[in-house]
Amino acid sequence: MRSEDVNISYFDSVTSTNDVLKEMALKGAPSGTVAVAWNQTQGRGRMGRTFHSPNGGLYMSVLLDMDTSLTITAKAAVAVRRAIYEETDRETSIKWVNDLMYKGKKVCGILAEGIGDKIVLGIGINFSIRQKDFPSDLRDIAISLYDGPEKVDSDSVDLVNGIVKNLLGIIDDPSFINDYRRYSCLIGKEVNVIQAGNVTGKGKVVSIDDNCALHVLDEKKGEMVLSTGEVSIRI
Ligand code: BTN
Image (cartoon, rainbow, N blue to C red; front, side):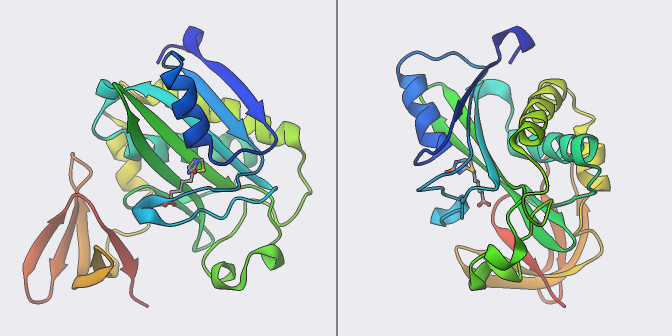
C-alpha cells in the first residue's frame, strides 16, 4: 500500500466495515481503500464471535494486496499500538495473536479476511465507550481508551490517520517483530492454550519467534509452538 493510494471513506453506521470494503473491492476498489464507521450493526470478530460495536468505538477496514505478508495481523497490532500511543498517550500491550490490551482488558481486536486477491484488514477499537455501558458479560474484559465522550470525532479521525501512517511504515519492515515481542503482555506468563474452543494445554510462555508463533512450555507436553489459536492468562 502506498500513501498516494490511500482513500478513506467515513460512514455513520454500517453492518461491518469488512463487508463494506469487500463490496467495494468487488466493484474494483484498489489496495489502499479504507472504510471507517462509528457504529456497526453486525461487527464480527475472530472465531465466529460478534464484535460489540456501539457508537464510541472506531471501526475501520483497510484493503491490502494479498501478498502483503503472512504476518500482517501481527504487524497491524504493532502499528495500531504505536498510533494509539502517539495520538492518545495510552500505553497498550499486545496479546498474541493480535489483540491490544489496556489496563489488563481488551481495547482493540483485529480480523483479516480474504477477498479475491486482496486482504481486508479490520480493526476495532473501543475509543470512548463508558465502562458502565459495556454489556455485563464484557464489562470485566473490555475497556475503552477514554471512559466516555470526553473526546470527539476529530480525535478518532486523528487516530485513523495515525493508524494508516503506521501501517504504511510497517508493512515492509521486518523489525516490527522487535516491538511485537517487546510489548507482548504474555512472555513469562502462565497460560491456558485454547484451540477450537477447548483448553489443549497449560504452561509458561517462553518466547515469540520470527514467524510470530508463540512458544509455550507445557507442563506435560513440553514445548508447544502455536501459530494459531489463542491463550488465556492464568491468574
Ligand atoms: C476480534 O477481536 O476477534 C477481532 C475484532 C475485529 C473487529 C473489527 S471492527 C472493523 C472490522 N469489521 C468487523 O466486523 N470486524 C472488524
